[in-house]
Image (cartoon, rainbow, N blue to C red; front, side):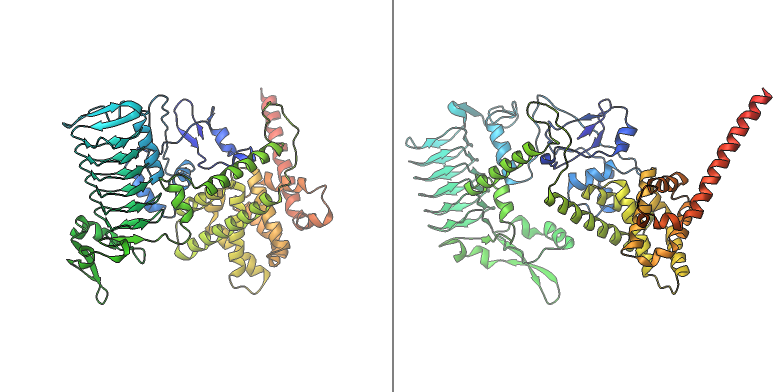
Length: 560
């Protein structure tokens, strides 16, 4: 990320940088508009944000944002219209983190137990009447804990107030909440038991989360990654498979709408799921509350005496389950990740654009990675299609140009494109629309193009801040006339003149385009020759202006 060292304003942010390429791409305007920039790749984002109330309204205006950092933050950084700014705060000795999945919950909990967050640790009392004592090997024990002599409490474990632990039970690297009842011959490893949990004899828990009021009958086994929701009952001798989620509510068949979710949040049935359940009358859509016999009676799905439903893992979600679970990463996945890291390091070593460990500079080399080139081409095609769809929607729905600019900026950030590429994609979309508009002659086609250019001039000019970007539009038009839209071939010079007349493309861009074509083959100078009269007129006008300026200076000198 890039930060203004004086104001601490965030200027550039890359959530997932590709370190294997050894380079980053910065907009040159970033360097032009700021006298000094501090670049960082040695900091960690805590994902803690303090926002103004206006931020909520931005999500309404930019409904296509899918990721808070990748889309929303980047969208604000390039928003020149509203003028919103993001400032950073760097901490050096404190602890800050946000929990957004089960694995981060496990990681931060371990940091608390191992006292990285001091003074926010279990044995420092900030309120309440109960006291927790720190014992050897990082074991925390609250008051009024009843523990059998044969029970073993391992290191980095927290035992809450009023908990009872039976004989021959082993607990390690776990958190046990308040008022829990744990029977005999039980093994608990790397798990989190919340309050008022009851575990009968001969059960085994490995890297699981157990919520308030859960009852586990004798002989139950929780495999790694299991999550048991509130007041679930697991039947005798039942084995809950890895990464399963068990709830008193049935798994939704389809995704609920916002209105249904809002109704469910306000429904009294959510507060006490064990006794009341909301059922939908499909004939008229009326919600009625009634006693749920299925939830009050044992179900075979969780074994004898079990109450609840096992939620199946959605297709394609297995990867996310092990990534976000508190269970250790499987050996095969860990080996795969390590192999990927080794491959990336090997690529970095072979890439001449990256500095070696010695720091010695190497000559520039040509990147011959065909896969990267192929991916880049695919991205460019997808980007152009997205821009075209955005532009056509704006045309058909009469969307304001300022809103279209915001959407195109979002696409530019998502695909990591330059302003010149945005300008080329927008111009291509305009010309394609002109081509698809009914016409019977080249003259009518030219009129269609001029009409569209005139109406959407502001949109196109937003991405033509310098000469190179304007030349990109000319080159895009050349390519269209030769390949995808040959109908524009005879009117190239006329449309080029209209672009100049509408102050979209400046004189310098046209003349520089002409200069770059001087040493090209005749086949590459077709459109230069077609625009020869226009180019000659520009050069003569430029020379006359220079002569007039020179004459004016001489007259001023004579008067003096």
